[in-house]
Image 1: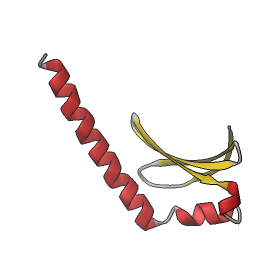
Image 2: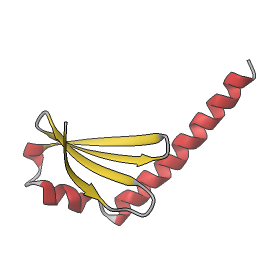
Image 3: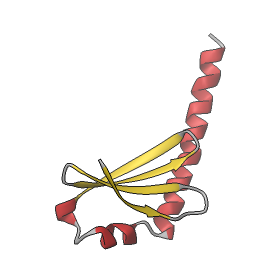
Length: 82
């Protein structure tokens, strides 16, 4: 897997990889990560991939991170009460 771009963001680390004829857009916050895969044939190139990572998409990704943290926190609490 090869890093082809890093997209600046104030909260998340956003890295674009190229691997197996796909772009992988990886978002990281703390110990959580989300990855979205796009076939390279479905886009015109890296610039289109970067354009997809707009404010609206980043907002949804951040909301999902909050949900992930909540889900994990709940399961962690359940596991400690066993």
